[in-house]
Picture 1 (cartoon, one colour):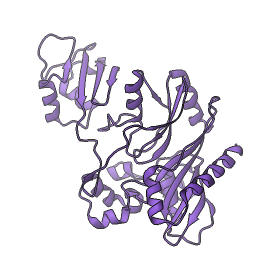
Picture 2 (picture 1 turned 135 degrees about the vertical axis):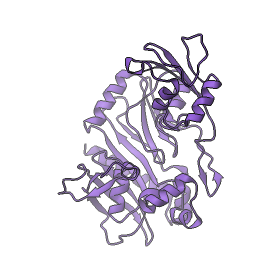
Picture 3 (picture 1 turned 120 degrees about the vertical axis):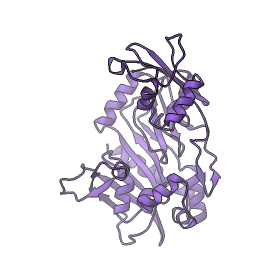
Length: 355
């Protein structure tokens, strides 16, 4: 059981209490249980460097040290290069400070940069929204919903448990309405400007691909879970579309899969436009020029641009198109971005008024 955590931009310290189930467990096995991304060799080095230790004992710690119920175990993880992102072999300059769209005593609404995690998970422990604001305010921040790392846009963080509980309830009981901005390839030029997808979404099997990929199934299928997304295309040409997506449910990768199945695979989507093999090539850092050319940009072109909640102080929040997607539009599509943003704001406000 975790009892304490300390974050800043350079290190992460967590303390745990050994439960009855951990009694007799080796120290290195305990570390593997909570940090599976660390190899046995790295764990040995951490124990030797006193970055992993049983703090309530005066004796030296070893990988084979046996835990006793009630022991306090502390682990320190220092920031290294493992969270860096690369494109064409060059390190991507990540946005250090997320834009704050709204803030009061209970809530922060930010425009999360692409590649920033919502909260620490796996190897992503430092470039995270909660870590940034916990370091700033020296207090716990509560993530009431999440965005995929590559998805940018509106993210709400509660500053106290009461606000977190209220907003979590709102998300879980479909009291929150969301709008996403996207850029996609135009593989279906005959599709209408306004359309929807109700394909069921889920996965089959328990291998790595099944855990990573979301599959689409017919609406009348027994497979997957119910999912529904409304789409509105704002601009189109022979190659690309720019549009808004209004998800009515919250399935994994819902907009990306529904858009792809509708003939509009998202620009930069390594998994669904590229395919699982290409996704692995980028993940392993072995992608070739043809794969970079197909993706065009380092991340999928999806941005959470509008949100409406029951939160009384600020029920409606709207952001703008992020810099990277704005730059791509200016270079590839003949459209005035300022007018596009005005159109988006009007569409979102009209949508929210229907609630």
